[in-house]
Length: 463
Image (cartoon, one colour):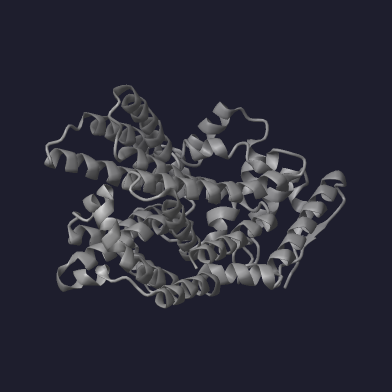
């Protein structure tokens, strides 16, 4: 039964890898590639810091994106989502190994990590921008991957002094890099290291290493926050830098997204599957026992603060939550926090015995079947199946490929006029930006500049 469950979980994962075969560069992918052409790495980084934003790490990855790697721009572009999904899995597995300290078997760790990855893919608010749009995926998903590695390296340090020193230096580099990915990870890193420093001081433990890491995070944050480009980008939006408005709207978004996640069928069913595992994990895993000492009020507050931290920068800098790729960052860390709260709930009072029961084989089989159905028939799992099996992903691929061919022809013939025909049914899991509103002019113009055509050669067909 368990082998069949694992195989069906892998089959469930396959559709997300399959979707990568239909991905196409859009919007900022072309803008960055066209804007950075002919610039050195230093010229590009300095220009972005002065005139657009302070993201000193992710900006380095925008200058030579996958559309510039080969004549066929899709080869590298479609490889990136696969690599990011694999890296997400590996980084989550690394963190799990650091927490359990080999108390679980490798097979158990791999299965638990696979369940985590599928839950994340299922629940993330914007799957398209999360993995299949290079600009957004590298900025936010790669930041989360690095943060998982960073937290793992903070746990259970080695007793070897040389190895401990090398790990500390690696973590220092990771800390500086993560802060420079985007404003969301900058805020999370500040909260993480301020909280860690306060905890070490409160428990009277040596905190010199933590202090150095905190200083590195603060230094990187200053580079981000003081970038002149932030003001340039902020000038494009009205009603920015309103503290109470930003906090209030972030709090409302916390209630919204946490409610959506908590009542999702997949999370509820995996929560039921987790209950009989709680007692076994409590008795075997030292790191798990340490987590159970978390005060319940802190564990309950953390998911709320997490979503606030991932929405506040958007409201502060732009006055609105224009996209949900920032909430993807909250989602990946919400899932373990949800199971932490469930574990603490099982530990309290009369509810503790709930974790002691071992379900019968038929009951476990039904729960696994329901979990697989939820992963495939609700949320992003259903949307991915619908796009792939219903033909939307293929139609999207055909339209985008036709546009790219038209742009190449227009670059060769200045007299050619390119008419973008709107997609009738854009996919829900790939970034098309052609939903209720028409494709915006700047997106088409960036694509024209990338291929070497004139902006005036392209326009959108009137509805």
